[in-house]
Amino acid sequence: MLGTQAASPLSFWVGLEPGKVVQLDDVVVTRREVPGQGEVLVAGVVTNVEARHEGASFDSDVFLIADGKLPAAVVESAEVRVTRVEPEVFVPPLPGSPAYRAESADRDQALYFDVMENRVPMGLGRDGKPLYLNFDFLDGTRGAHVSISGVSGVATKTSFATFLLYSIFTSGVLKVEAANTKALIFSVKGEDLLFLDHANIRIDDKARSDYAKLGLPSQPFGSVHVFAPPRPGDRNAVPHVSARTRDVSAFYWTLADFCRDELLRYVFADAEDERSQYTMLVAQVSARLRTDAIRTDDAGAVRVDNGPPCRTYEQLVDLIEDLVTDEDTRDRWAGRQVTMGTINAFLRRLRSSVRGLSPLIRGDLPPRRPHSITTADAQVTIVDLHNLPERAQRFVVGVTLRGEFARKESTGTARPLLFVVLDELNKYAPRDGDSPIKEILLDVAERGRSLGVILIGAQQTASEVERRIVANCAVRVAGRLDPAEATRSEYGWLTSTARERATIAKPGTMFVAQPEIPVPLAVAFPFPAWATRPSEAERPHSNPITGTSDDPFAGLPADDDVPPF
Image 1: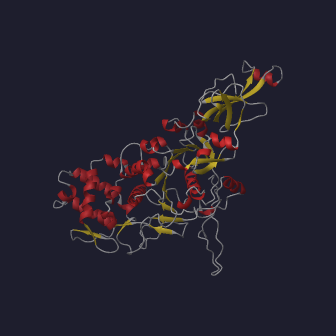
Image 2: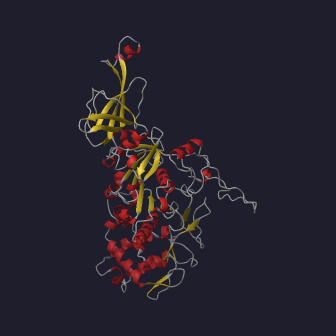
Image 3: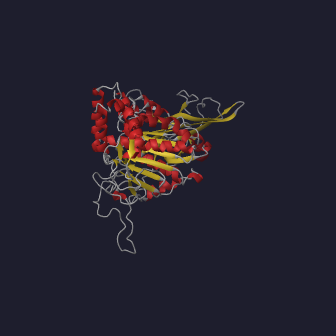
């Protein structure tokens, strides 16, 4: 312990003996005898390390010291931010008392791992040893939800989110509930997330060793089902994916579903829509469709007032336009007080949705085929959105979340858990404005803990996400941050040193804060054991009966771009 720097019960400085080295994030422990209390352990994490010439007065003295012409000594010291005092007798460590790098039981005690009854491996520390999350702050027992922030393409937000899911599913923390716990992942960036159940051929021995240190198997996810939108114009609703051919189902909603469930409001799911004058008109038309639209066949076509059946979304839009503009039906469908200016604004917005939503809202496909997104078929359900325009992506996310949240409400129990992974959270729940999707996400953030719906949200900028959603996240994670973004108040949970480090963090390094530990921990998580693109997927062997290859990626061009994660 240094005597030249003031020590407090919350932080202190230590000097290093010659030949000794500490680095940022090392765990340091010291002890002090307190009269009437006995031995008090004071433990913390290194948050700053300095080296200087002791005895030098001027900057130019460094050259004289290097030549041996001026006596001086190189002194290294480290600042330690206290994480735990046991027992809680808040006294400062005494100058001159020995401090040492924490090992085994002392390390566990310093980082509260010894009191975590249910803990989840989240990666390795700078010392190469496992770091854990308290699962009680993930499963709703004492908190829930995860917020992950970082620069797109560098921060590996999605990779960390999938690794965290993998750790939860395979670490044993779920016990008997493991088989029934589900994850719902919305994929918006190409087809990179469609191969979680395929082994990664680029995993090496070091990565396998890292998984072994964490007590996890180095293998892909065991149960995955992919849902993708139908190909535009395809009469058989073939899933619109190019690389994966197995365990892929097309999803869409029939026109009867659209009218019965009042899904029209999710067509107007942008935040600015809720500030527009036609919001009440959307609600009015939705209510009329629910009561007046009659299903005409098993394919889900509808008709209104004995008119011709609507079999496509465009035909339904044409019908709505006629009903809200015709003098005979306008009062009933639009309302007596609604002006034509409001109606025209509504129709312009509705008409612009035809191109994006026509493949998703149908009444012209063969009946009795499964077409609903469900999490019942596999442990991990992936909803592929990357081929959809932004308007359609919002619609799918909003309607799917509403359905899953309602399903969990109807069960009346929080178990088994449902984890929802949603990237670009700032797009679906922006800080300003209101929208149907934002309402659902707020509901998940505020009530999901009691219902067993756990949100793992990722975004480039936490400063642009609705405050109440971020505030309800018990676990906060940051990867590589933009320097300007790192200065925002939303990252107040990072220490000043961690903020600076986050601007130069390498892919695979995350800073994780959880309620029990007063400082964020720097975590390095292993290279994915599952494929993150077609070229990484392990090729199956040929079928011994047919002699043909079972490779679902056969014929695809090779991809030599090796991602960091």
